[in-house]
Length: 86
Image 1 (cartoon, rainbow, N blue to C red):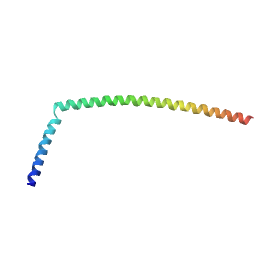
Image 2: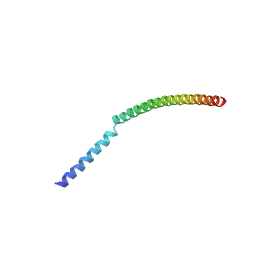
Image 3: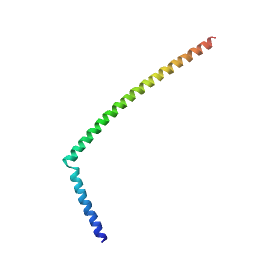
Image 4: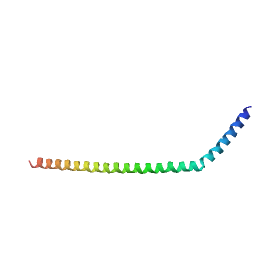
């Protein structure tokens, strides 16, 4: 009895696997794969545009921060020079 159950499971699995292969290689499945891949490529392009915008904003922020630090450093240097002259 136990062997029949195992044999039935094996045969069922083989049939299911064969049907699955036929289903996955059908024209409808191929069209679905094409549409899914096209959607993935569109999503990639959208994400890359967003990443580029974020990188540009980050570069602007870093440049502004450097300008602020340079202005602060020059102001401190002027203060030190005035302190030494007095």
